[in-house]
Length: 269
Image 1 (cartoon, rainbow, N blue to C red):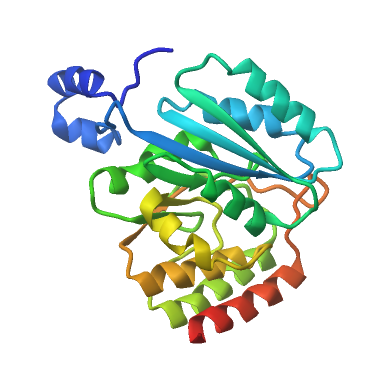
Image 2 (image 1 turned 135 degrees about the horizontal axis):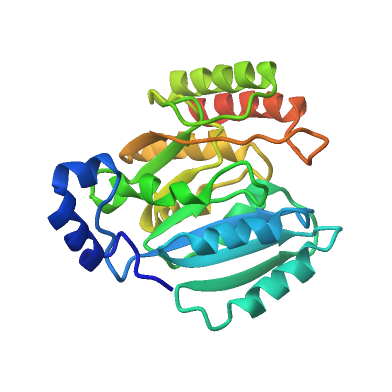
């Protein structure tokens, strides 16, 4: 593997040529050589995208623990996971951990299973589809590595990154849920429902024993618990390539009502 552009040696060479100001504008900074990112990927019937997604995660120039949690898939996802682990068995930059649910429980349950096995310095959530771009990991990690943040949310509604144009009412619903959540948490997030949430490992493990939601109610629940703990939260703009229901999108209107219930439950309790 080529030397990471975020390594101390590479950054020193680049900054000596371009200068600190240019490096900052390009988003370059130093990631310590011993830093490890745990990537938790819940998997449910993702045979069409799983290999491409994991390859994209592997290509990110950061040492990683990649945790694949199969939530009792009915397709070929488990066989693909095994093949991925075998392929990267000798890869010092990417260790692959496979975990399994024998009964389908939901995304939130899969994430709790993954968090319990995370050993990296920071933990990021990655969906197994191709809606979110792993190349944006370094940008999301920057506030944590620089000691500014405990948690970073990647916002689909912040900044000028590219977005696939899809469902209008979904965007309205997401903004409504975020606003309602903010009313109870006193955070000023723009995208509470985002997949990309990055935590210092100590932070997510501190709230892990209290997490309860098995499905998409995880998003408002974890946000409420983060706010209650007083963790330092940052938000960064990200790109988004949403998929249609025909392409495999799973969240539906019932999950929206459950999110409202979770916002009220964890915001008032």
